[in-house]
Image (tube, rainbow, N blue to C red; front, side):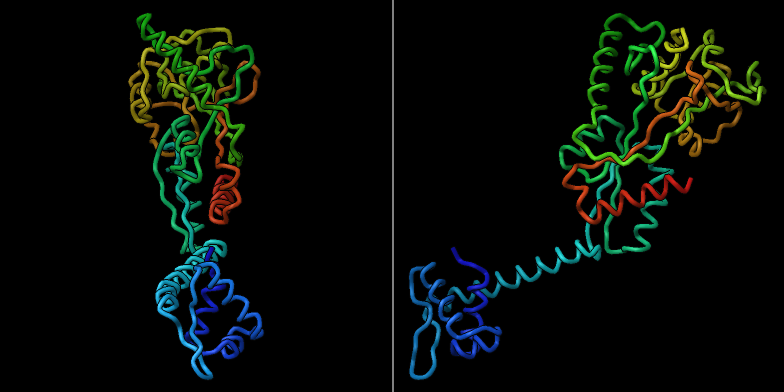
Length: 333
């Protein structure tokens, strides 16, 4: 096997014309140069130098190997420099995958601060909800995934997608399958999780609702007779969990992933809704009243927002820095 150190010796011998001169250039002894040249000739099974008088010159095989050695050593030098730049955060890449409300609230200040201190680190962003974002992380399509999950509501058995009012039996079966898939996607045991924040859930009521002017938190049980507007399947499933813990099953008349649509439906008096606090920072809640929502336990309802990566990736300097900046962005809220 040809080793890089042997190629460096060959290059020095060709440049200086002798073993002793090559030894002085490389800062070692003449016998060491001789031994390494013998090892290289043994590897290629042919002489590489020809002695002539007091000097020496490369054989035809030596000249061919030197031609390739120049490119190989240049490539190794460039690789070493690039790796050193990544290790020293003068370069590097972090591919982020985030759900929309984190993309508009947590990601911008975190990336801006990272670029301000380490402009050579490239950061890219695409959007995906869990569990798709976790599949992308495990599949090598990103280095960091921002995700969320909901704590299990006391006494609730439903874990994810809930059927909309009037849904046919076949569609209910599909919703149950989706619930199982989302529940499986919430397993983070193989990942490194950096907790960012507990995002409080906020109740949306029509402006003229009987509870709109209370000024304090609303218990979910007080909304048992309302029609509901729900969000994504995972959010919808958590709503059903919370309501089950409060002793009722919500009548979900509308389901949409579009937060402005949720606000519009509530403002039109077509139902009530619960949205994450981060979502309301990107949506103008015109025509609706916002109230704190408490679960049956009396504690505020929240979702857990985290940054996830793979164990090996957590040791990469640029990834570790991105996680640090995301934590800082969450702590600064």
